[in-house]
Image 1 (tube, rainbow, N blue to C red):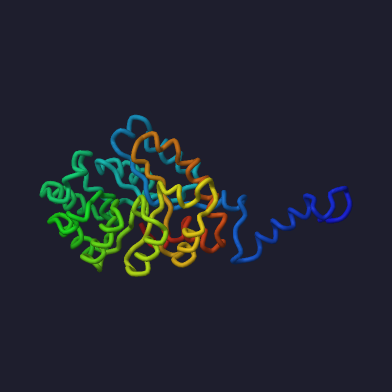
Image 2: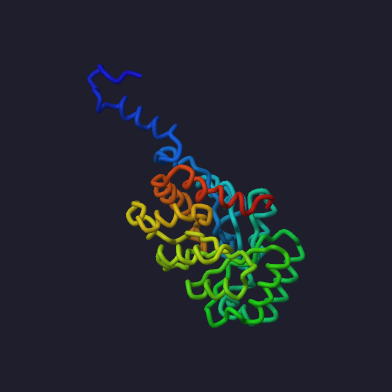
Length: 286
C-alpha cells in the first residue's frame, strides 16, 4: 500500500483505505458501513398471512428474505397455516410462533374467547412452536382467562409470548407472569428509549424487538438515547420487519438496509448481537 506519491497524499484514497482496514481489525470500536451491509439478520417479526399467499408463493417470500440477508425469521400468521407453509419449505430457517388469530376478527376478542383457546391448544400439539403471538392486548385484559391460560402453557412448555402492547401492559404482563419470557413487539411502538431501558432493568424475562421503530435512527443517525440502552442491554434486543400487510414484503430489503445502517454506528460486538446473535441464541435448535 502506498501512502505517499501518486498525487493522492496523506488524505487520499490509500489513507482512507488504511483507516477502513483499521476499523475492520480493531475489536470493539465499530463496524464499517460496508461491513454492516454484510451482517446476517435474524428477523424477529415476519407474518405470512392469507392475503400474502396469492401475491407471494412461499418460495418467493423466502427469496425476499434471501435478498435482504435474513438468515432466519420468527414467523406468525393469520391464520397459522401461513406460518406452516413457510416452515414446511424451510424448517431450519423459520422459527414458528402460533398467532391466536384464526382471522383478523379475533384481534380484539381473542383474550376472552374459549374457541381461540381451543384453537391454540390443538395447534400446539404439533410440537413445533417456540411461542404464542404476536398478539394485541390492553392492560385491562392482561389477566383475562385466555391470557392466563396461554401464560400457563408458556411456562409449562417453555414457550415465549410475543406481545404487541404498550409499556403499561407489558409491565403488567411481566408482573403477573414473571416466569414467562416475553418478546415485546415494536418496543411498545411508541415507548421511549428511557422507558424501554427501565423495563429491561427491572424485568430479566423481557426482550425487545425493534420493527417499525424508525425513531431509533432518525434520518439514519442513531439516536443517543437508544444507543445508550443498546450498550447497556446488548443481549436483549432483536430487529424485525413486521410484514403486517402484503405491501410490507416489498420493503424488507430496504428496511434491513436501514437497520444495518444504524447498526454500523454501534461497536461491532453489539451490532452483531442485535442483528442476529441474540435471535440465534434465544431460538437455537428451532
